[in-house]
Amino acid sequence: MSEILFLVEQDPEGGYTARTLGDSIFTEADTLPDLRRMVQDAVHCHFDEGNMPKVIRLHKQSGRYPL
Image (cartoon, rainbow, N blue to C red):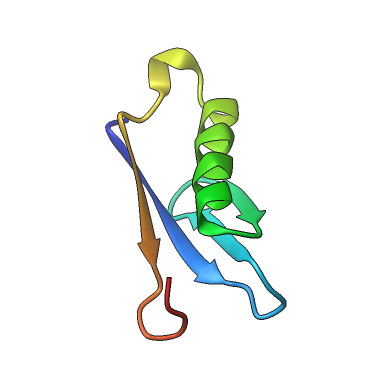
């Protein structure tokens, strides 16, 4: 796998969530810098070393919440 994409949303109750489009990975954090770290950790836990994506992209859902 060369790339994995996460959809980032601001949680109405506070913080941020990120979920993949295509894989079953979900994580959340209070701040965007923490969310980036949590996404990296989740990807490393989900994939074996040989199948690790080379690029991790975070995409904010347009219009609803500013990042």
